[in-house]
Image 1: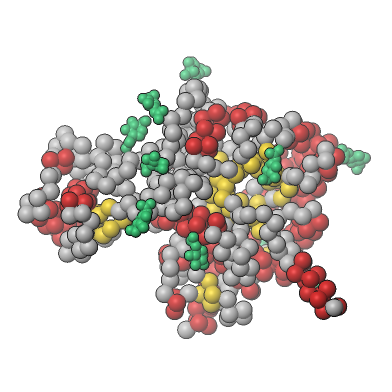
Image 2: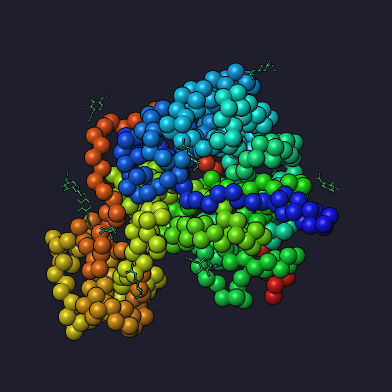
Length: 497
Ligand SMILES: *[C@@H]1O[C@H](CO)[C@@H](O)[C@H](O)[C@H]1NC(C)=O
Ligand SMILES: *[C@@H]1O[C@H](CO)[C@@H](O)[C@H](O)[C@H]1NC(C)=O
Ligand SMILES: *[C@@H]1O[C@H](CO)[C@@H](O)[C@H](O)[C@H]1NC(C)=O
Ligand SMILES: *[C@@H]1O[C@H](CO)[C@@H](O)[C@H](O)[C@H]1NC(C)=O
Ligand SMILES: *[C@@H]1O[C@H](CO)[C@@H](O)[C@H](O)[C@H]1NC(C)=O
Ligand SMILES: *[C@@H]1O[C@H](CO)[C@@H](O)[C@H](O)[C@H]1NC(C)=O
Ligand SMILES: *[C@@H]1O[C@H](CO)[C@@H](O)[C@H](O)[C@H]1NC(C)=O
Ligand SMILES: *[C@@H]1O[C@H](CO)[C@@H](O)[C@H](O)[C@H]1NC(C)=O
Ligand SMILES: *[C@@H]1O[C@H](CO)[C@@H](O)[C@H](O)[C@H]1NC(C)=O
Ligand SMILES: *[C@@H]1O[C@H](CO)[C@@H](O)[C@H](O)[C@H]1NC(C)=O
């Protein structure tokens, strides 16, 4: 009997998910033509996005979200953190203006206090826990603390030696902040908010982390990463990072704080030195991430405990500074047109359409241009493809290069042949893809259009309101961490081999 009770207590003290995991979307507002809040909300509804995170508590957005049933995480921007962390009355005012004034008509379910504070504004770290406590006290005073959770998003770069996950620990120099923070999260029944960017982990690993491992693609069993201490098998960076967070918390004796991922995504475009920021990779990452989270697979350490995740992000933010990739994390452009159509089965969950079976034929990455030219000549000749759209002034003339032209000709041939096996090869220079290569007025055979399941957005077009929104900063990853990770990964691989 005593054993049973003990088991019960143990079971009750481990991480448990009391509601279904969900996929949410972050809404950054650094757009030169930020859609009006009513347009944003129309897009969310059309795409069946039920969970969002705002980087502030913009009044117009909160009003537009009223009575929509959309669950909203609002944020205390980093600029306001000092004020709130230094004064409980400032915190109480913030809660009264931004929460009490809108709840429950607008379903605010969480408050993220600051963003990656320890790594972006370390000087404010000393007030972080007070800010969390003051905001929470104000919620208690309004009797909203059970409905609305308070936490602060951390950069995954504060988790050191994250590979293998069982040896991960939180950067000890932050223990004076992290220990009281974890105590707060535990005692208030809140969760650890973590930003996870396998894209940066992959980029900074200098080839040590395989691309497929970052993208959740199936790996051959001998390439799966095995944690030598736990013998748990890892098939993607995301799970390894979440488990690293669980282990790192357990190292400080916190074993019952669930993890929620406040940011994760993949850029669809990048500079010349960011060759893996592509439409295809962004689509693969986000599609696989959504499936992974909604499938409730959980992580190797906590199977079945799915980790709710907010995708970074709704819109491409064209006015963000930094490399091209910084501006291209979005699922949609400012007009609400999808940047790519996610490969999702079971449409209706989020970001509707199922285009899983939609395939195209295009030139393979790295194909030899001479062979591509020969194949193009063949397709437009003996292959009987109508190549008139490729001539000057026609819809697929631009961009005027052999790769773009060949992709159009290959795809046309492939569809002419009823997508029969072997009709997308062209001596090895072509490959089947699920990303629609259509661009501008050049619509490829098989294209279902770039407009996805988007319905017309009838909200009046209004002047950009971006100045009302405060910008957010997110500095992703850190070179130092990556060196540690790389070394750790190498050692880890060494253990495996
Ligand atoms: C703020 O703190 C002071 C002193 O620490 C306390 O007397 C007061 O009740 C607190 N106010 C709120 C709104 O919690
Ligand atoms: C807000 O969302 C939560 C979680 O689904 C739900 O339980 C609650 O009823 C909603 N509240 C309102 C006011 O709609
Ligand atoms: C740990 O955090 C401290 C304080 O921010 C920083 O100086 C140090 O570089 C971090 N350590 C590692 C290994 O990242
Ligand atoms: C965790 O708990 C163990 C056993 O109670 C204790 O020995 C250890 O010092 C604790 N570690 C921390 C970081 O508090
Ligand atoms: C969910 O995951 C399990 C185990 O990874 C897999 O067998 C199953 O096919 C997945 N289901 C869906 C709908 O993706
Ligand atoms: C996709 O193809 C499979 C097998 O060819 C078929 O069973 C399924 O219904 C198709 N799905 C859609 C959405 O067309
Ligand atoms: C997408 O929608 C825009 C605006 O409604 C329209 O001009 C365009 O032709 C559509 N594109 C496709 C491929 O249907
Ligand atoms: C998306 O799905 C809707 C409803 O199933 C359908 O009417 C629409 O044509 C689809 N759009 C695309 C681009 O496949
Ligand atoms: C979308 O808007 C266009 C132009 O305003 C209109 O012609 C079209 O019928 C609308 N489509 C739907 C589905 O409402
Ligand atoms: C936008 O604002 C500017 C100045 O604030 C004004 O001149 C312009 O007419 C506005 N445009 C629209 C479409 O309302």
